[in-house]
Image (cartoon, rainbow over all chains, first blue to last red):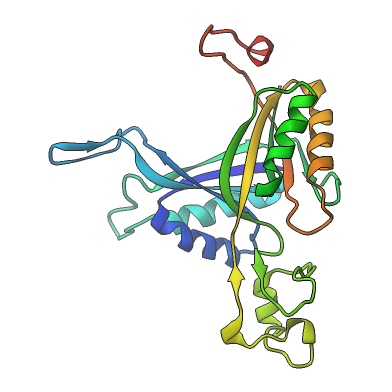
Length: 111
Length: 145
């Protein structure tokens, strides 16, 4: 099992969720976060915003479903794709980590 | 070392904290999150108990025409009166603990949070490579004490 953590733009969240739903992935957790990447936020004139609001999606999936889900998130979360320019700074990142065990609380079963 | 993610009901956060304290695990982080599972959130139906147990997601209810279906009284809601909540507010708690503590923590969280209804939550156990106490710079097992 793997845990996918996708940090995406808040405005693209709905698009990503719909794309995941189309691919049969419904269970997920959403967290509002703030963060920045290697660009250190953005600068507008004299004002520097060092952290930008983002949304983090957490999805746990069996190993064989992970690569497809990552591609689905990637394509849905990428903004402004044209022939020459692909995506924008701040579209987000996806991290995949291991999950050893998973339990449903209602049944107490290991899944 | 393992990290335990438990996604639980908001109102069970306080009892869970006390129970975890009582088994000797002091460090815990709570986050407000929104989440959903297999049922894709909740939908209001004329079910007398208010909570309808279902194994299928909301999209399947719509797909199969179960919403606004006069033949099935459980789901017979006029489409314009359907109230859906696709994500529900939950608390997520994160605990980093030694391997041997994990079964006990999982057992405690399960016992406290089990109501037998859907939406009780889920627990994930993930491996952690290292932990560092910022104040002293201690690493690994010592950082958890």
